[in-house]
Amino acid sequence: MGDQLDLFLDSRAVALANEAIDALSARDAVRAPVSLDRLRREGPDHPALPALETLAGALAGWRKPDTDPAAIVRAVQWLDNEIAPAAERVLGPAALAFVGGFFRDLADAARGLAYEPARATAHRAWLCLRCGDWGEAEEAAGAIAGSAQNPDALHWLCVTRYRRHGLAAARSSLFALAWHAPHRLPSVLAELGDELLDGEWRAFEHACEWETLEEAELPAWFPAWYLLEHPVVGKELSGAAFPDSPAANAACLLVELVELERQGHQRRLVGQRERLRRLNPEFFSLYMARRAVQYL
Image 1 (cartoon, helix red, strand yellow):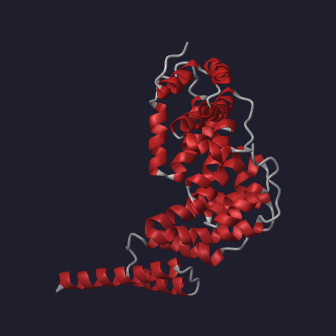
Image 2 (cartoon, one colour):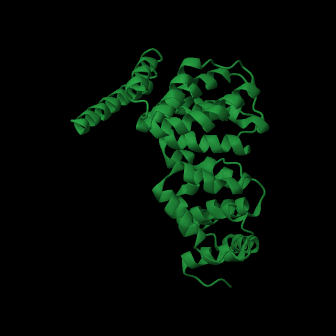
Image 3 (cartoon, one colour):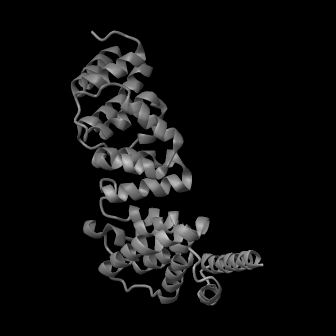
């Protein structure tokens, strides 16, 4: 009889916990505390109770911050350090939407705030990304002064364009990020989570020894290698602003070389190939190997 009673109590606690989870998943600030009160009385030892109490308290006590970057940053830290981990523990697939509701309020509070590099997480573009408002994120990121060279803006544009329209829409921003902030490229690729693009990155890393480059420089050469493997992508870069760096110059040269090869301009082709060789002999060797010709 005792075992049957324990089983009944356990089942009752599970049912009450599920009720609380459903209420929190729906962001129902009225129903959630009622379900939790029942769970406290009938299943005080339920392992999900502490996390559920944290989430219910967050929902009940939430007040949208004023339009103040410092207050928004503090709210972001609280969400990331306390609320998001609790939501991930107990809400399953609904965790993103639960936390996203708070970030949507923060994005609204950040409307009109200027971009501050030291407080990037208070910018509307980043906050819109956190709640999945891709269109609003793209608009806000594109409105940042110098967004075509700004690492934060380029990061956000990569993500939102990829989420909205796929890799082709994000590629030019991804290349610009590689040139302007190469150290950020691997983490952005991981954030995108594109299986084919991840495979391209691994192939790039192992394409040669890259002995002439410092490790920190290597990601900047990914666009040139990508254009080497996929020449048709060069058409997407028409009108793009290439910074004056060896890696960007190589990518720009490669686009020109593909066109020269198509047109058969041999004299100019030889000169531009020599320019490519001077930029990076290893990359030049990859380029020539693709054409199965001997450089003279």
